Length: 84
Image 1 (tube, rainbow, N blue to C red):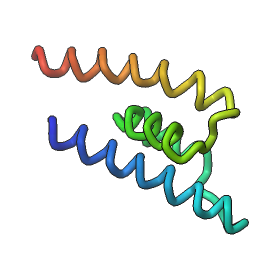
Image 2 (image 1 turned 180 degrees about the vertical axis):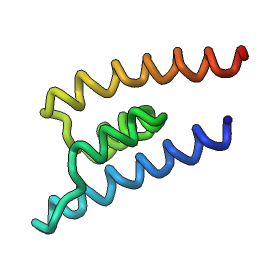
Image 3 (image 1 turned 135 degrees about the vertical axis):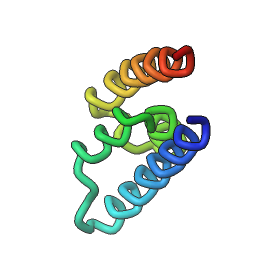
Image 4 (image 1 turned 180 degrees about the horizontal axis):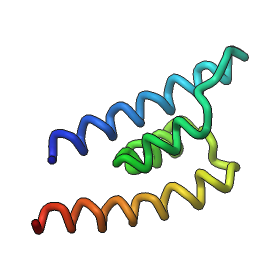
């Protein structure tokens, strides 16, 4: 389970980097729904770090409010799974 959490967070972090680069270059972007999906399946910490480090999506409420909420939900979910 640790390897999964690590991998999904690295992927989520990279997605934020790629989306930021595409935004700078005015290219086709990664959809917000895809970014939020990766957060929901465990990548919320990676996305929060990406949001802070790359200064990306920092003014979008579904990210600056939603990602911390998803992080808490992820933490509770993975904590519960680890206790089974």
